[in-house]
Amino acid sequence: MSTPTRPPNIAVLPGDGIGTEVLEQGLRVLGAIAPDVTTEHFDFGAERYLRDGTTLPDSALDRFRNEFDCIYLGALGDPRVPSNVHAKDILLGSRFKLDLYINFRPVRLLDARYCPLKDKRPEDVDFVVFRENTEGLYTGIGGQFKRDTADEIAIEQEINTRKGVERIIRAAFQWAHENGKTRVCMSDKANAMRHGHDLWQRVFRSVANEYPGIKPSHLYVDVLTMRMVQTPEDFEVIVTNNLFGDIVTDLGAAIQGGIGLAASGNLHPGKVGLYEPVHGSAPDIAGRGIANPFAAILTVGMMLGQLGRPADERRIGDAVGRCLIAGRVTRELGGNLTSSEAGSAVLDAMSA
Ligand code: IPM
Ligand code: MN
Image (cartoon, rainbow, N blue to C red):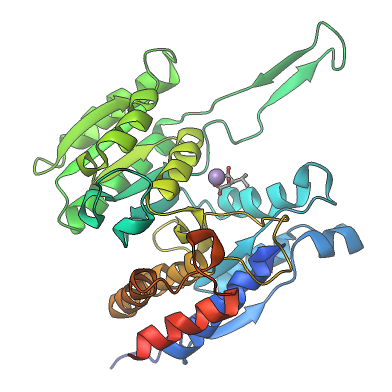
């Protein structure tokens, strides 16, 4: 006898700036394609922080762990909060405390017209980046000495654990294996960073040996950025550390047509994942209803894919692709749609 399972439950954190605007459109698409899914909104973000100092309480993290299948986040960042401490607490806090070690960022060109690279077609720009998400240069370990003096020293430690390096590299190979890919490229800077990145090299070689059907390759990160621009067709899966992954996925977003089209998932198989557009809160255009909701909508697709509904993910991706081809896009892509018109365009394309 099968045990009855409840429908997926999603924690929604619109956050700041355009995060709230794009999530509204993502939720319209979610409601249309997966009406059984339940959601609960959380108000963590700049407003809440400025009101009562709350960033992300442990009690909320406990609820995410125990009661939800996914977290759907808009964006965090507000000019009123000095150095955006709330954003760091909420975003990096959930990545670290929920141990979401995979930052999964697909780079997929849906229509050639939006690619800034000459003569590249959708089949040329189609790879995924596995960004390590729980260590590297992001842990905040370090310190300052003689602050605000001419002799100041500031140290930022890069953390590379064997366990951390191994699990992200294995995730990249495993995903390649399960998705019919035959190439995994690891990127580091082992020619200059002799300790931590030597660990990446050794672990990469040993995990690669477990996947004889997959061709491992390596590029120093400076060369990787060049190749992503010149020959993006060389890549199927890229695996790299936290900071390099941050940088190369913005480059990836640019070559797939812009940051308004890039979706991401912060994942740990078997645990609640956090899904978000790669873009930020864009305070310069916030409140005007013109932000591109496609990344947030594609993020809904990714979430549904991870929830075991790959057909819904494909349907959303196809619908966004059709909007792009038809030029039904927001202003930064050369169209004239508002965020909500762009959301409606996707809904139309889904039912067409
Ligand atoms: C991202 C963002 C974050 C990061 C910032 C807001 C800390 O740029 O998700 O790519 O660097 O990870
Ligand atoms: Mn980033």
